[in-house]
Amino acid sequence: MKNIFLPFLTLLITCNLANAQFNITFELNTETIAEIDPSGIYIAGGNGFGSPGDNQLTDSDGDGIYTITLQREEGFSSHYTFLNGNCPDYTCKENLTGLPCGDPGNFNDRFLSPVMEDRTIKACFGTCDDDGSCTIVTDSIDITFELNTANIEVDPNGIFIAGGGNFGNPGDNPMIDPDGDGIYTFTTRRLSGFASYYTFTNGICPDFTCKEDLAGLPCGDPLNFNDRFLPLTTADTTIKACFGNCNDTGGCEEVTEFVDITFELNTVNIEVDAGGIFLAGGGSFGFPGDNPMIDPEGDGIYTITVTRPVGFSSFYTFTNGNCPDFTCKEDLEGLPCANPNAFNDRFLPATMTNTTIQACFGTCDDDGSCSPTSVNGIEIDQNLFTIQPTIVTNLLNINFNENDNPIEKEITIVNAIGETMYTTSLQNQLNYQLETNQFSNGIYFINVQSEGKMLTKKFIVQK
Image 1: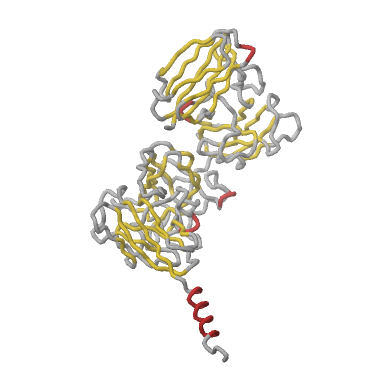
Image 2 (image 1 turned 30 degrees about the vertical axis):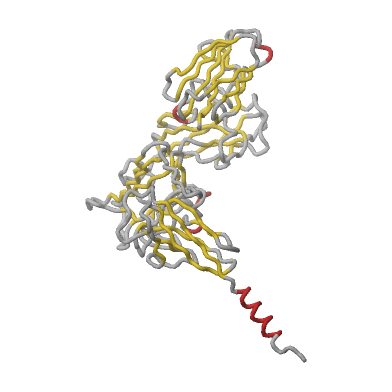
């Protein structure tokens, strides 16, 4: 007899498989939160976790680990975020800006990949730890923006900082004027070394039509929507600005006087990278690739002319190639034209008239030549020694040039503020291992001197 139930059973099994449900458990460590909001901890956002207040996490045993288990269909995925409190405007959400687990294209939220089985997600509020721990970030800095609005009528919706991949959309980061003097402020905490483009908006406009117009002005980058640029910042910093102009003193007087600054770089002592030569760094010249230099006469002299306000000054460097991480920048460590507190960059003092800067890649010659480098008559020998690795946990390997093996060498280690941490003398030794357990985490400089020659290199201790 024909089994009339078989097609029905097959359909039932197929439907059950198509609608398979899995449990997703979130365990959130709140050790990084100074005070839990009385309204509780929540998960929200994306296309699958609703609004603040919809999904509350609980801490049944009072250990600071808040949990929630939600059922979702097989293949479910979504962005999401955690909130300290029930805030419909998301102002109490965790801040993952600039961190690898925060998606800048989705409000710096986390992302849950497709769920194919029961899963437990361990997290820490405001960090990217994925094992349930909370790595407390100690090298964070406060960046304060002070915006003068004397030259505009402020929109009823307010003033905002936005853009640049780190500051979201107009409306995400409101600035406030607590004393009603027209100076709007916003403070954000970021990891040391944070850098970003940004802009100010007069009102909430998702299409950025209410942003300040810096087109044609030196503080607006035409390659980045004419936004401003915040350079690598390693200490608490206050940025003063005026809406729509480049006055960086906090006033709103229009900058009307400009100077042309021409950089002429001699590259006779290097093999020019196929990516080209660039002016970069210092908070005013962006990243490698932003300011290409050209060699119109093919004589190895690369030039670029920039227009800046009268009195402009900045650190800067040259790069041989387009390397976003600055690994192709010139190495001026230990040379008098390098500032060790500014990544060993050069410094351009206040410029009052049209000026031409002549330089040589990797040396301090200021006449356009590329003579051998020296400090107080001691030759800088780039081949004197090498080090491995540059980020050290326990041992730093120092390898000397074979030709200098019989010569006595003086080794000195200093920290970032110039304190001598270690000295020793070596002879007839091609390799030397330095134990760094005695050093705390931070930046150090190793200097080697040997019969009229010297070289300084930087390394980082990170345990």
